[in-house]
Length: 381
Image (cartoon, rainbow, N blue to C red; front, side):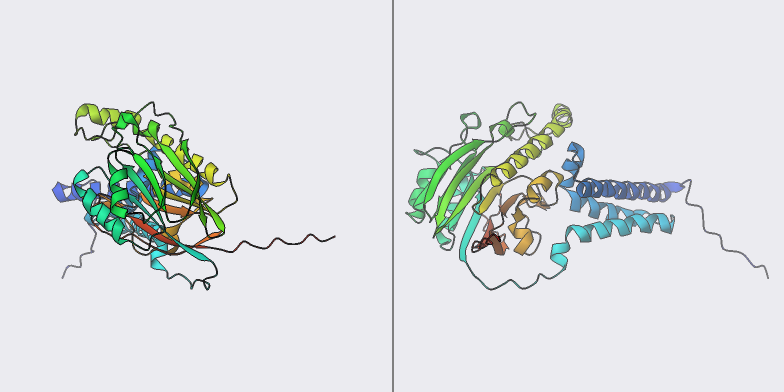
């Protein structure tokens, strides 16, 4: 009888088709884990890089895709497979920690409730009647933030909204879309509360020389809710650069030229959006009254470009919502690019992302409590 000692087959160099598939899958797995670790390094240290910022918009998909590709790395070193896979799965858990752990009970209601909604009406005119009907049915909304409002005060969405809502929102502030975009990127704030001092504040375009990024503005107003003033801001920021759209967000298809242009201008768009988000933070810091920012910010809650804003404001959905909260889908892939942020002095008691099917974006709703002002301590002598 001959005793044979089992020796595992060497996996390197790879042999055969399946050997090469396993080897390439292992390389992709390790590379994904290294990039994921790099994104965490950027986030923890408050650093910013254009390419890292672009990847951070797809961070959950990137981590999950790397872990799934690692399943193909069969027959290779268990250590080389398991360590990156565990890292990627732990990263996914950290990114969605607010969904994994139950939130504590909220304190009793002590102030006035304000219900807000932000909705991007989208480019599709055929969906407008359904959008108007949906807004007419939502009788519980106090302040409505609208993006991609088409036309002006004489034609387009504004007169049709006034007719559909029939005075339900007696107060409004508008920013017409630039003529260079065909007046397709207008903004609106509709409110049950009186609005004061409406203002249009241009947002910095950063290094982007033209296009929708260079035309971005913020619509600002103050609302008198009972005895408290609220500062309201509606914004539609610079979108991520994608190779099948031009600088005006028009579909141009994929070509060698469009891909080359995308590679050369990608960093400009990331820096432009970051500059706009920092400017919105400066607006938030420019007053003492409670502050609400809503709109299509074209960034996700875990992206690197939103870190400076998130240090000052709270995301209502991250604070009190449940689920992924995706507001925009590109095929099977979704992302939360529409947000409601609020400052201190407000408490998010609930947030949701319904799917009424009236636009290519889903609305974000939030129920915010206006907290009583804290009494000032008397000086001691």
